[in-house]
Image 1 (tube, rainbow, N blue to C red):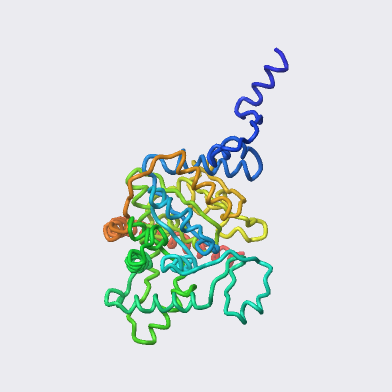
Image 2: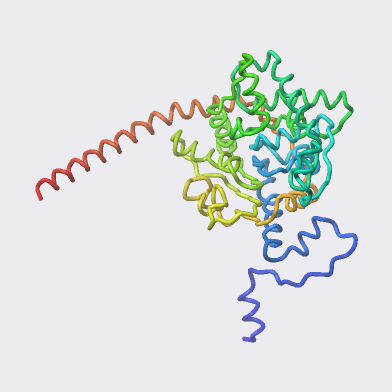
Length: 395
């Protein structure tokens, strides 16, 4: 047999690297398919294909987590809103900061492209706020704060609620303000309200929105954000996906608390509620952090398998692209819009009570069995410990 035949067999599973030259009219999707062939470019191509060939098909559920200053950089308007409108995002976990800075766009306030090398002392003197190379006037903060405080004084906010319901109600006011200002597709919160996409935040007090809620509590506001509800509600969304025969996918931008909050839904279902499950089906993360320094918060997909967060059977399909989200998200958005048809919106926010009731009923049924089994294990373990102590005394 010729060396050529042997070579073909050895590399049968691998496509040849032999790209064409880039033309001046190439699309973003074709650029990814034809030239992102190796290293982190290769991982980004794998991420794009995972999204369009595994995560989006068959009406799979897709949760997106947001960390880092994405909305002030305009990625809410340029990427996240088009993805929601196309039905490609079903639920979101975000830092409060991303939602707060999204309000600037929803209220038609001005942000500017600046430089990371400006004199911050001079900026402070002139009342200019800097987020790396993004600049805006200090009054943008004051006016946004005033809007939040005005809205949450409304009667519908004077109660305890989950952060998804809170953001839905807040988004309604941003949506109405946008209509008065004749804005179109300007706010992530407003678009999520319009299309029924629930948005959670894992740390409600860790943003200017939370700070304003805290301030209003000293003026007798009855608004309290229910983190227990959030934990169970997010688990209910994932349980709905898996129990109805759909896939559950996580698309993680950055890391941090939103990443873990999204991934912990599976340990909540399996470990805490005692409901049999295997983990999320697909895991996609864009990050510039490394696991060996402890910076890749929430761990790699392989490590997540050990926690029950990711189904071990789908681990080969999981992708971590070590690419800055401000680079990867626009490219992946363009790819998805070019390669996959729009999907019907699930409008999960409108089914929140039903989804929570479903998992509650399953927990109260399964959890009772789990409790009995756990008690038996504890009793057996205690008996074993007692026996060991007896043996120790005999020695």
